[in-house]
Each structure stands twice: as structure tokens, then as C-alpha cells.
Length: 366
Image: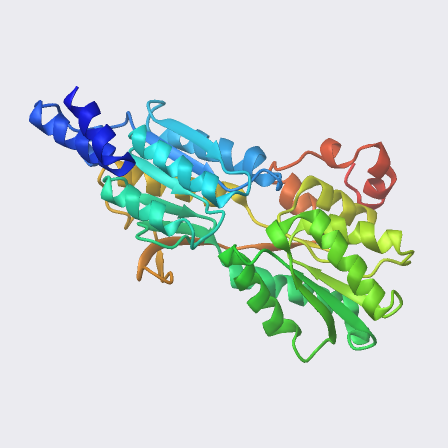
């Protein structure tokens, strides 16, 4: 009764304070954390959106599998997806704190907007692993890919596709969302390769990474530049590449210019097989997910990260964050068999549906 009275009088923030005070006064045992939690830990997993296939298909099940493996099946993963809404994700962090998870893995919708929630988690004694995107705030660990290298790989592939015609027309750059810190790194890496070697006719930062926004931007670029003047498109990911290629086809552009991508989504791989998309960036999700799970479990048990994290990075708010950075691969029609099929991401049957059977046969995929 005392807790309820205090909560009504002091508001939402005081609820947690009153709860802590009441627990101490009543002699209750605080929630287990660190080494005291043993293997029976709760790992909060917050992913940013479900527009990109990778999160539900790869990241979530891979993290769940590794947490189970590392805890003898006793660890629990509590999952929530923000569906591209930063406010929703902040509320999800609050819920995870209320549910007394032992550690959080957070792939931020907005790296800046999440900072306050990361601070709240830390104040509640919950360590935070930033996953895939470098969240601001007092994070304890971070795993992702070398994101500037991703942009460089994309840029190099586009130059390779253009060959000695790189300056015969103009390219369009379709970057990712400004709320995603990775998008800035992809963009920087791509510019470091492309600047001075191509003519950039139009460049866009694509709201929320949405394919439909990329489609609208591409249609505008073709109208402004002329469909015969666009010789290549830098697309930061596969979803947007799909929207871009739809716009190119709608405008009657033929043959299609080389278009880049990222994430090795099934639809992207199929477009590569069909010759509609030149490349994607294959990011092996298993080692990234496993690194996040290893760091999360170690932090939940109060262990050091020295055996897992091999490097350190600086965020805008936190210096020397223990990190694991995973290398990436340029995926083209020439190495589909040796990458996504060999690693078990997709089977040849999944890629080579009836629509793509003939193209697959030409590439020796079936």
C-alpha cells in the first residue's frame, strides 16, 4: 500500500524509486545480476524494424540459438521489434527494465534517440550491447560489420561494372536513413571510392530506408537527369535496390544500369541471378549474432569481454567500447554458390524458383 501511495503522489519516475525503496525496507532480495544470475539469465533483444528480411529471418533466431548454447538451454531471450519507431523502442527498453532482464542487446532505430534509454538501463544495473548500429549512451559493448568498408566494397563494385565508361554519364546515389549511423559510414566509404571517378548527378538520403521512398527518389532523378544519362546507381541496400529497379523499368530504361545493394536478401540475390542487380554486400550474420550473444551472456554473468572483443571503437558519447567487427564480402553472380549457398543462408531451390530457373542453370546453381 505504501508503494502505491508513493507512486500516485510522485508520478511515473517515482514508481521505480518507490519500488526499490520498498524492496529494501521490506528486506527483499534485489534481482540477480552479473555472476549471481548463473545460466538462468534473461537477455532482452530489441531489433529496429521488420522491413528488412534479415532481422526476423537471421538475427533473432541466431541470437536465440547462441544464447541457448552458451547457457545450457537455461537462458531466455525476451524479444521486441520497434517497427522503425524510435519512441516505441524507447518504451520497449522501459518494459525490459521492468521485466528485469539481465542484459540488453539493442539495434537502435535512431542511435541518438536511444541514448536516454541506454542510460536508464545502466542506472538499473543492466549492461547494454549495441548491435549492428552504434547506439549512443553508456553502452558496454558493440558488434557490427566494418561499415565504412561496406561502402567501399559497394563503390568498388560499381566502378568495376562501369569500367572505362565511368564518366560517360551520371550516377545516382541512394543512401540510407540519416537516423542510422551506419548509413553515414556506408555513404562515407562509397564517396571515398567514387568521388572524382564518376559524375554524381543526384544523391538522396532515403527516409526510413523504405523501398517506396527510394522508388520515388529514383523516378525524380530520372526526370531531372534524363533516363539515358543515368549509367549506374549506388544503392545502400537491397530493399532500396528493388524500389530503384522498379522505377528504372517503369521509365523504360533498357538495358538496366548496374545497381548495388547490401544484405544479400533473397529478392536481391534473385535479381543478381537475373542480371537486374549487379551486386549486394554479403554480411555473414552468424558471426555477428554469435558475438552479440557471447558478449551479452558474459556481461550478464559479470565476466570480462577480453576473450570475445578484439577491438575498441568510440561512439559520439562513449570512448573505448569493447567491439567485434565482422568482415564483409562483395556478392555477385560469380560467387553466390560459394557464399550464401555454401553458408546455408539459402538453398539453391529457394533462389532458383521457376522464374529464375533458366538463369540459375546458366550460372550452374542447379
